[in-house]
Image 1 (cartoon, one colour):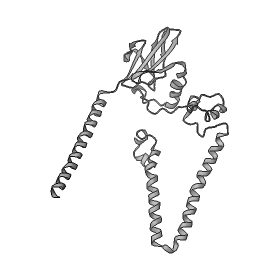
Image 2 (cartoon, one colour):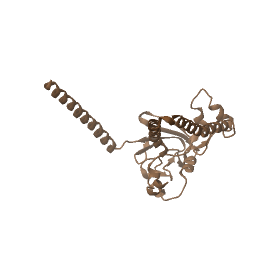
Image 3 (cartoon, one colour):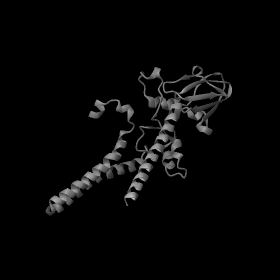
Image 4 (tube, helix red, strand yellow):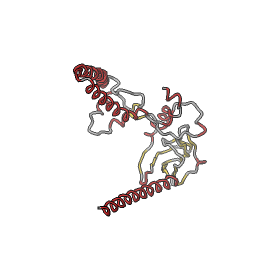
Length: 258
C-alpha cells in the first residue's frame, strides 16, 4: 500500500502485480532452507525442537489451503458453479449448462457460456479520458452483448471480417475496438476517420447500407516498430559476432602459448 501511495502511476502501468510472486516464492524457499541449515549447524543438540517447529509451521500453512480447496469444491455443486463471477459475464441459461460444460469433450465449450468482461487494452479516445465510467460495463454492453448479432470470420494477414444484414440506412455500432493504426474497410471501400465515429471505449460506429454489409478490420504495423525490430536483430547479430570473435581470439592466444 505504501508503494502504491508513493507511486500511483504503477496502478495503470503494472498489470496483475501478483505475477511478481513467481520471483518472491523461490527466494523465500531458499531463505527458509538456508535458515534451517544455519540453525542445525549452530545447535546440533536442538535439532528435534526445530524439526517439531518446522512440522507445526507446515501444518499451519496447509490448513488454510486445504480449507480453501474444500470451499471451492463445494462451490462447484452450488448454484454459482464457478468460484468467482467478478470478471465474467454469463451467457448460459442455467447453472447446469456451465457445470456440464466443464466435463464436455470440447475443451472450449465453457468459453461459449462464460465470457471475460474485463478489458485489458482499451484505447480510450481523448475526449472520453476525463469521464468517469466503468470500462468493464461498457465493454460488456458494446462488445459482448452485441457480437452475436454479427458473423465473424478471420481472413489472411490477421484481418477480421464482420458481416450483417440491415433493414435501413443509418449508423450502427459494431463490436470491434479501434486503435490508432487500425484500418476499416466497409463494403469494399476504405473508411477515413471522418466517416465513422468512436464510442467511449474505441468501438466504431459505421454507416450501414440496406441489405448485406461487410466490414473488414486490419491493423497496420507502425513503421517505427519494424525499424526497431530490424535494429534489434542487427544488434543481436553484431553482439554474437563480437562474442564469437572474442572466443576465437582467446583460443588462438591459448594455443600459441601451448
